[in-house]
Structure formats: C-alpha cells, structure tokens
Image (cartoon, rainbow, N blue to C red; front, side, top):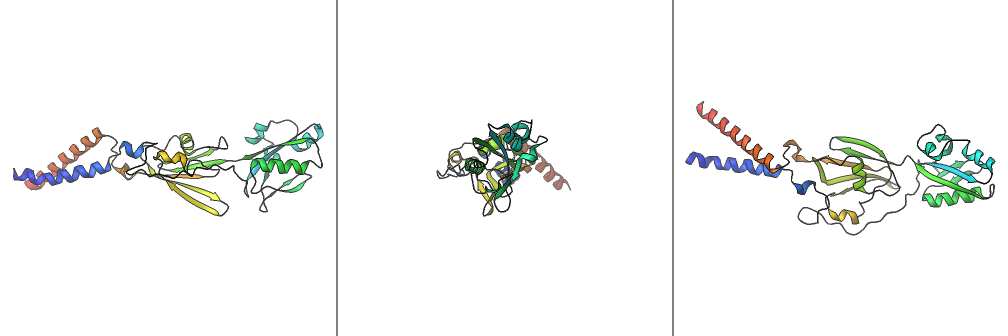
Amino acid sequence: MLRRLKKIPFVFVTCCLFLSSCITSGKINYMQSPGFNIPAYKDSISFEDYRLRVGDRIFVKVYSTDNQTNALFNGVGGSTQSMISGGGASDLYTYAVERDGSINFPMIGAIPMSGKTVREATITLEKSIEPLFRFSTVELRVINRNFSVLGSGRSAYFALPQEKINIFKALAMAGDVGIYSDRSRVRILRETDKGPIIKQFDLRSADIIHSEFYYIEPNDVIYIQPLNEQFFSITNFTGLISTVVSTFSFGVLIVDLFKKN
C-alpha cells in the first residue's frame, strides 16, 4: 500500500505535464470572446488607401480619341491584363517610382507620384497629359502587390488579389496556419516611410476585426511561430489519456527494472 502511495506524486506530475502540453480548442479557435488568455483590442480599425512609395512600379494606359496617341503610349495589340500579369510588353508600359518620388513619363518628363493614392496619381497624370493631348483618360494600377507568410513549417509568397484584404483572407490564401501554429503571437513585418515596424497580436481574439491589425498592406511579411506543445503532439483528450498511460507504464517498467537490479 505504501509503495502505491509513493507512485502517486509521479503520476500526478506526469498528468500535469501533459495537461499543460495539450493543444486545446482554446489555443487554435478563431473569433473567441476576449477574456482569460484572450486579449481585447480597442476599436481602432482604419483602412487607408495605399500610397505610392519609392520603388513601386505602376502600370499606365492612356485612352484617347486619337489613335496615334493610343499607339504612342500603349503600343499596338496586347491587353491590359496581359501586360499587368507579365506579358511580353509589360516593362514598356510600367514605370518605377524613382528616388525623388517621381516617374519619368514619355514626352512629359518627371511627374511626382510618391505619397499619392492611386486615384490621386491618376488625376495628376491626366492633368500632366492634358496640355499635350486633350480628351485623354488614364488607367493606373500598382503592380507587384504582394505579401508573404513565414514560419510554422511553411513559406509562401502571394500576389494581393485586391486593394483591401484582411488577415483572415490572407492566411486562407496560405492554407491556414496549421494546428501547431501559435495564433496568440502573430507578427507582421511592415514597411513604412519611417522604416520597418513589427506588429504583434493575438489572432484568436474576436476583437481583431475592429483593430488596426485586421487589414494587411502590400509587402507585409506575416510570421507565425510554432507552439511549444508541438513537441508532444497531443491534440485531443483521447491522445492525452493514451500518452499518459503509456508514459506511466514505461515509468513503472523502469522502476521495476531498478528494483530487480
């Protein structure tokens, strides 16, 4: 009887160890109400139109009633979509935002673009063209808009499908984050005019949809680290019981071997 009592602390410690290592639904479920280990975020959601930066490349297509004007700026043949997606003539009609914040447009020269939204840049370009070619309109798009997902055994690089995309859609494009990913400490590396910054947040909190972390921006790098519990690979109660029983049996076997020796 006394020998059995001596084994109780061993069993208790073993159970506590594996209970603390079990991956529960609370560690992986999204949209959980704040409380306990789920943080609350203040209502600070804001989506601002992307502003052009040095190094961005923009696609420009000019529409005019004059066929010669169209041929001059847009070439002959080739659709807008094929040029944007990497068609043979795409480099001819895309322009880099230079270090001085401007693009060098044919027959116009330097046109300031840095710090402007796509709408503002389009209006600026149309006004710059107007003195030479009246009744012209411009289609302007930012190309090479993308984001990356790193960590937890995966690495992926995606083109942004639209101007406005939230963190959940971005991770869905990456195939979710995996059961052994730490959703409580998601980090985003973001380039800003003042240099790179790191934002960290808990992806499990329902408050995320009202916070500054909800929308991602072009060139964001999303990093998701693995859970510490990945080493034990316990994801449900049945697995926990099986592991505890196996560990206890193994412990008893080792104790018996020591006694015999």
